[in-house]
Length: 413
Ligand code: PMP
Image (tube, rainbow, N blue to C red; front, top):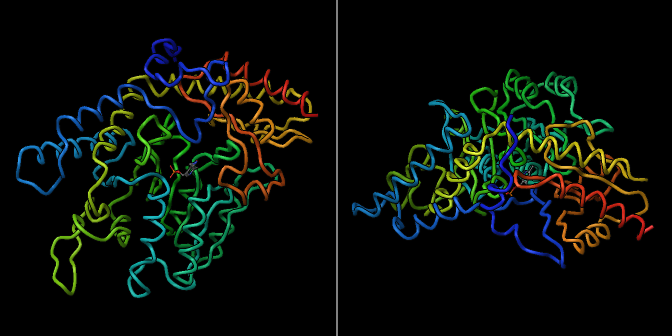
């Protein structure tokens, strides 16, 4: 792929031009939140200034235009994710809400009708962010199902054979896995794992939060019933995201948000739920957010997924090699080349101290457990320092990260 036009690209992100603690900002916390380009802000501003009204509720022209803008955003994002007629896309406030919509939706209809019942098994990978674990812990508690963890090996890898063994024990109704572990950068063989689980009759759930900005999978090519992603991790607005699902699977979900817009007919005693997608989108949605999220998808496709992915791959390799060459530094999931992040530990030094010294050099990274405490405990590594990349990051910034980490280690040891 041709190299990205870095200067022009960076000019779309005004936030990057500032200094932090006397140094140019090197923003390397993209796995937590990416920055938003002018194109997304302009799309949202235009909606707010010219089309803002409540959707699906008015016969008036502005309401119709707002509804059209919302529907167009849905269509853009469905194309972005490779959804077909078999699929539907539900707007959510992010990955967390999308995963809760699935987990809660599978028990909340009650024991007579819900997909999950006492004695069933929910298999969740051991690589997950708390957002793809805690809702399943609760689903198990509320339905009487058993939560079973697909345990990673000592290097933090998942294996098909491990899942096959669990599935052979029977009773699996759900399998949930991430497309990339945010705490380590591990990229599990999720395509094969989803296929195995699907063949065993489970509903399959993919957390695509960490890949939405550069390597979003094609929904139609996966044995995937539900896929979740967040807008703010793909250069879109905060508080936006989506749940994409196979229609049949989405029909299994009891709505998380009950109220206006998600019903067809209501009496004092009972309500008849509307059809998809509205059934799962109760209340007034974040329409400007949906418009901004669609603009972010267009921005990514306009820039080109292949060049973005190649760029991030190069930055990751550069960072992983440079950091691993420092004394006492261990890079997690070193071989996992699909990730846009490097998570590392430094013998005898706490990540918070490294993060603080990096910040003094203008370099933003994240330190701690990254909302994936069970995984880091399982691996016996504890908290880590994580640098994560987006399309506007440069090789120069990665050099600064490596040099500043080396200096921090000298100071702290
Ligand atoms: N899953 C993964 C893999 C993540 O990295 C994150 C965000 N750190 C989430 C889920 C939760 O996303 P959000 O906070 O946008 O709901």
